[in-house]
Image (cartoon, rainbow, N blue to C red):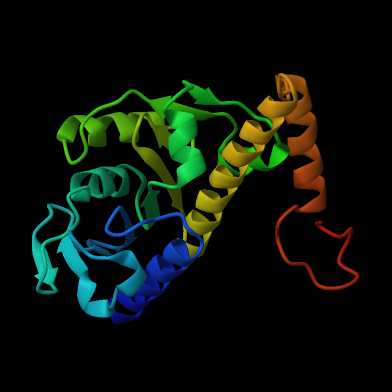
Amino acid sequence: MEGIRAAIATACHRLAREGLVVGTAGNISVRRGDLVALTATGVTLADATVADVTVVDLAGEVVAGGLRPTSEAELHLGVHRRFGDGAIVHTHAPASTAFACVFDELPVIHYQLLEVGGAVPVVPFIPFGTPELAAAVVAAMADRQAVLLANHGAVTRGATLAEAMERTFVVEWACTLYEKASVLGTPKVLGDGQQRAVRDVMAALRYGRPQPHGDGPASR
């Protein structure tokens, strides 16, 4: 898991650099088999090192590292137990958090949100670090790869850490886009038929995946 721990530390640095986390607010995890590497509690993410990433089993028992795991460990473990191997990113990103302080759902204002399953639900406020919040996030992610937490932040998941990170940036960008559109007027959102049409195009073009030159239409 050493390589995974190093990758998590690097991802923490990027989140801090991009302004999606401040101080110790945020956490990342990656599951491989029966082990989960996740950021430790009280760690300043901008300065995270491999030693600041703890490894636990699926019951939450520490198997490597000298620090207690994040207070949101049960949220991470609950999602990992439900969905298997992959990565989870939780931030208090400003646009995502602001949106979750006001609305109950982030609608599909742009087709890129289809990459996280469509409209992003906002989980009602539940105190952090509780089993109730963990259960609510697991339930909300049944058919989504991203959720917002009311008056709290955002959670994304992916098959890889890179994918979960990318989804974090997409959700933050979409919340910013919604805010800017709202200044101009009432944002238009994509309806079910429009979303289906976009999904068909994505499938036909193999959208978002690198493709060799000459191997069909360009993806973007």
